[in-house]
Length: 98
Image 1: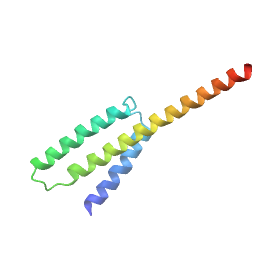
Image 2: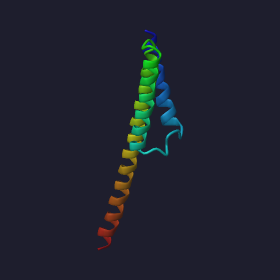
Image 3: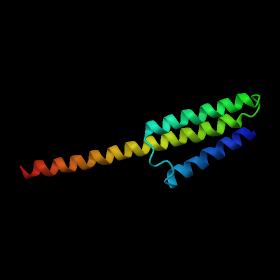
Image 4: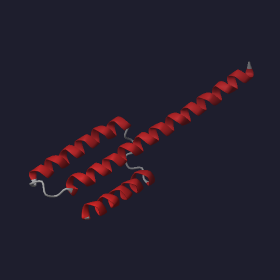
């Protein structure tokens, strides 16, 4: 039960942190995936070193990293969509002048 409560709290907290602050804003989606792999690998090593009894050592970083990667990917796609819209507007202006 404690794991579920901490999982929900970490998910909500990570959503707030990555959507409301500039934390991780300079990371590309690929850099956030690489950083997540490092963090999750470290948590698995720590989990094994402590005798495999504290599941939260793996659960919480995994949830936080998944939120980080998904928010970076969402921001990346939103940026691409904005660039595409600006490009279409500029193309529309060029076609209207011909």
